[in-house]
Every structure is written in C-alpha cells, then in structure tokens.
Length: 208
Image 1 (spheres, rainbow, N blue to C red):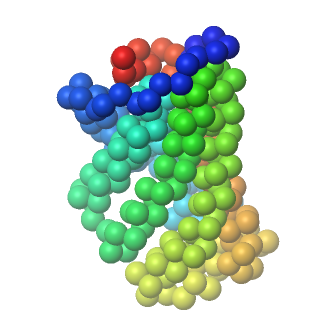
Image 2: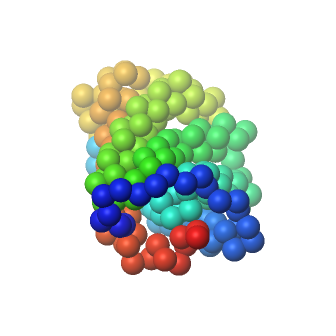
C-alpha cells in the first residue's frame, strides 16, 4: 500500500479479459479458503471463521470495489454449485451481502486515497459495517431461514448458543454475544492478513 499522502481519484477501468482472469484467480483462492473453517469457543458450531474474504478484499484494493464484489459473487456462486444449498439460496444471498459489507466500503475508502492510513480506515469501517449488517441479517434472515430449513424453532438455535455461553438466553443476546463478536473477529483477522500481504502481492492484480 502506497505511503503517498495524496492520490487522485480515478473511476474504475473497464473489466477486460485480463481483469476477468484475475477476478477468477482470486475467486478460486477464496473457494479454497472456504474449505478451512475454524470453530470458535464463544459461538455455536455452525459459526466457523474462514478467510475467504482475504482475496475479495485484495481484489477490492487492487482492482476496485466493483471487481471485489464480482469476486465475492463468483465465490458464492461456485460454492452454491459445488455444495448446493439448504436455504433455497437465501443463505447464499445473505452471505454475499455480508461479505460485500466488509470489502466494498474498505475498497471505496482506499480508492479515494491509496495510503496505509486510508487502508486502515477503510478496513475499520468495513469491519464495523459487516458487524452491524451481519447482526441484522442473522437476526431477521439467516437464523429464521435456517430454523425453517432444519425444521427446528429459533429457540433451539438459541439453546445451542446457551450451551457455549450462558449469557445467551434469547435471540437478542445470541446476536450480541455470538454473531457480533464473530463478525468483528473475522473482520479484524481478514484486515490484518490483507494489511500484511497486500504490498507484496498487489502488483500481480493491480489494474493499470
């Protein structure tokens, strides 16, 4: 990430063949990273962290927010094709929105001024945005959808949270003590990884 203090704002260039190849490469890496999930001690077993947003965020920084959103879309689409869905596509759409809520705001802010400071600000804003939107979508979309898909009441999902954290007693506390920390931790970890690797790998993906 450049240490220059001022950079002109440019519109995103059109996505040519080379850009589409790069998007495909990053989406492929994201799919691989989705296979490696890490369980968390404070959340039920169906909440596991993966780092598939790392290549998406790299794409946002290197090629712009639109390209990053395309990488997220291709990642979700390929995962849908390969593994199928238990939620009639609702979970995949929600995950697309949550993933973009981290990477797109970060990409928009970084594009305005390509400095380390702006990268950090963008990732911080993206992490907060993902945490807020993730809480809302989990409470009103994902958890109700999963309850229907697996034929169990939401209270049963909440009880799975209670088993790992006694402070989780209802949907609100489930979101506050499981979903919010999950998204916050994921956003921080993804941001740290991208911050550490971006400068070394960005020349491969940057659009000129």
